[in-house]
Image (cartoon, rainbow, N blue to C red; front, side, top):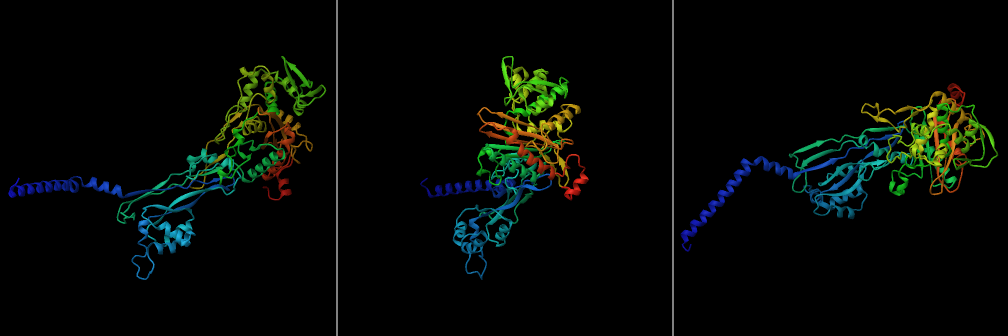
Length: 576
């Protein structure tokens, strides 16, 4: 090794080995493995961005938009590229970031200093401003500042504010559906996001000759509800007024078309504005009409009467001797108010809302038969209306109706329901004895503008036409025209009050009825929750029912009882 010649030869040998190794690697990379390496390089340069789809609109039955997605943009900056602004301009005295800040600041509504600070740095990507109008985006990009770009996003807005808020639900800041029809029908509404891919250079700029590929977004379908915006507004006003008048913690109002099962209004108080759901307590962002369960109280008597009429164990001519209080198998049953012994017909028992008389009717049937009728009316089962958070209520099997429960179930105690469920069940009598499944979505709008229904509601005959007619007569008799708080001038109204105490010591008052009783079409239920003392349904809920029913009948253009539609048009002008 001490010989210069040996060292020289060893050095040459090492150089030759290195050259051969490098050459082999070069041949491998550029020849044998060239395509794989090129593809790897492309992948490292390729950027993928999502193109968000716009959610479909949600409309009421008349096409009025209740929820919509408006096009917005997120502006971003590649700070390393902004320095090239006006680089090749000989006329511009101010170039780079300062010049870009002077041009961009007025567009963003910022100060020049704030804008220059945002544009200065070494970051390859940073958001400048989010959810800007398309006009702002267009103005910003028109400046042709290197490194300034925009991505389309969508902002969900609810033009009617709190009207229908509990039905519509809302979406989060990330566009994820969180409540209401937004959540249940997210699959139809959300659409499919698109994407764009492109190659970028070392400073983040798009390589014009590089690979570019764009898959456009497919926007979501529009959803048409069965509710009517104006009726929904009125129902919310009525529910709020009833709760505030009687110092209740909440209220619900349900408006149904008894023939089709369409929900025309589903109102809750307190409600919230889906434009700002965070401003309302979490308990106000649900839907009490389907999630809050309660004992129906005296309204449940109509199911006992209907079952006995259908089974033929009683008739409209049946008569009863009704004391204020009675003892049945050791259990004391009494009416709401003291009274002397009464001689009552079947209609009188219902009109006086007698618990004692109702028990006499119920004892003509076995508990199992009464249980089967409650289930046939849809109690203890979800309505299938298509909203999240629905409670099915509780109807225990007849085998568990032991002791006092055997008798209290005949007059609406010992089982629980929700507001929509109960309104739909009473609406069975208004539809010739056929219960129609409630629905709140009419369908989706197709690309050609046509409406595609999302299935057909189920119909179940619960009682015969004769029994339904008999119940109409009984319930019509229970609402005296001009006397009852539930009466509607010019219309025959059939209905029933209900009041029940809940475990926390408060009371729930209700009134459910339909009109015109001679040709039923609209069924309405008003429910007032959290009353601190006993206030009858006839006092707390019936006047609210009357106000809402009056508005609904006129809004729907339904003629007064016994009056043909032509006369109505002459009186009102163009029928609504």
